Length: 147
Image (tube, rainbow, N blue to C red):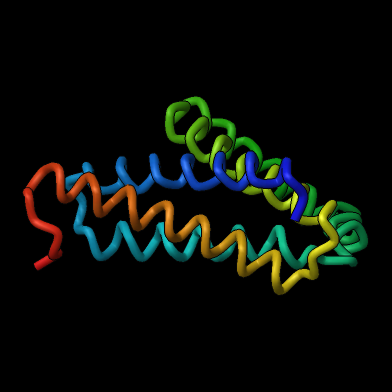
């Protein structure tokens, strides 16, 4: 791995560490919160590690039909409303996606294969979230065990 890749991987870890810290502060059932966080981390790592080759053809086929174009406009309007209503959440998601994309680009430049890139992205992201959540829980309760 290149020497500069460690900067982006450290940024990825710190970003997800912060997410883990913030997730532990929520007053939402922790099982649901952590399940959604882990699932979204893995989906994002898969999406960036294994890009679809026929994505352009699929998108063009979707927009060429009237129903697809109409549903895209409706979905786009809904997403715009959500972005403006929850701008702080959207900005957080954008920072997380940007950190993963930067790390993926550095890994791709290093010449690593897709499975290895997925393993690195997923393990660093999951370890950052886990450590951030565990440290916030420990600082709040003084216990290291989640029971």
